[in-house]
Amino acid sequence: MRILRRNRKRREGGQAMVEFSLCLTVLATVLIAVYQFGGAISDYIDLAESSRACAHTAARSGANVSGDITGGDYTLAKTRGNNAAAAVASKIPGYTSIVYAETTWAVGNGVKCDVTANYNVAVFGVNVVNGTMHSSNTMRIAQQIA
Image 1 (cartoon, rainbow, N blue to C red):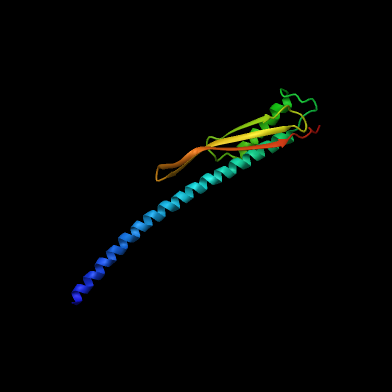
Image 2: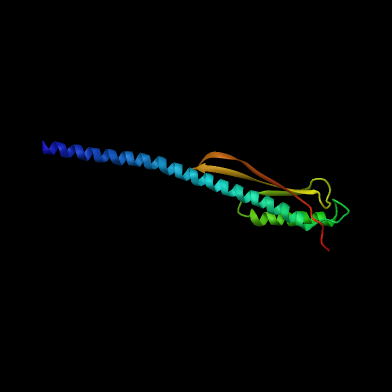
């Protein structure tokens, strides 16, 4: 009888290992998915910060009283805004930023910055979710200090 009981214990030990390996596989898949979604959320936070920095920098570049949208002030503000967005969103692959005046480039009017980027969440090489992230910010144009 003792021999029979020992064999049963050995069989149950193998069953526990199989159950553990199945649970570990599911747990590892869930953890990797959470990590991938966390990376996408981190990229979105950087994207939102880049649109804020872009609009802030462009608005602080200032405008003359004339409100000329084709002048050098507007071009310089767009360049500065795009550079500010690039400084923050440099780790996000394939982002684009667009700076434009809502009406005319004049003190008190709005300057808007739109930043977009593609995202892809993959678990073990299988695409779970993909799409485009978008963030937009508007700020009022400041008076240019001479």
